[in-house]
Image (cartoon, rainbow, N blue to C red):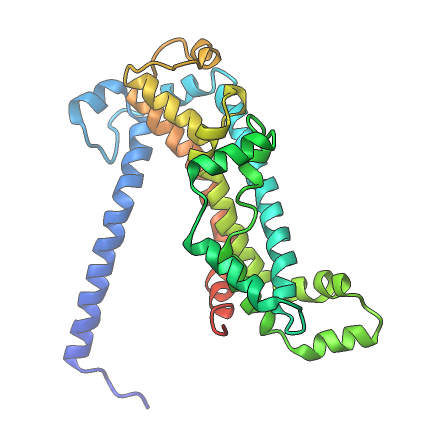
Length: 294
């Protein structure tokens, strides 16, 4: 029989719950403000400044956004980059993590040291730009997909996850005549779905929020992802120029209002928020399983 908890224990739990609730509400307030502002009128935004619930709902911001194909085109670019990039990331990470998890791999230690070295030192922005330019990837989607194909940190965690799988599975598969690629794709990857789902979410969020790389390598406004378009809309709303973005200026014939900026933020954030709950159950499990063994 469990004894009743003491008054001090219940008081401690009550204070913890209260503090955590307050912290949760504080983190939610900016999101609520953005969503409420996207449905508010420009007059109310100017008068009240900070609102959590508009007194008068308006869909003018969303009507303005969807009145041209610019936003949907950028959304399509971002969706393509996210799907293709995540697939490349997962495939490249698994194809490199699996051999590194094998203790019989020649030069395994030097390769691992080289991977860890990239976590501490990088070539820098200008050398990376020159390499991408020499490879002819400027103004192509490859410039957003190839340079970050493998994350060194995710690779190490995935390797640790593969090392925890029982050696008997691979030995049994080899006795049955299965090749190394067959072991990877038929046994190792199906057993590693929690880790793969977790790193897919990491990679997908990174691609969805692609901004700086697109600003550096993509000059054609028709190939801009949603985050770069959002930046241009903010510049236009603040009365700034568009530089050489003449095609974008033709689509948005007048500077967007404050509510339009908030509506674009909602639209660009909503898809990744919808995906997250489906991968949440694998999130903590996938990270923890690969972080136990080094």
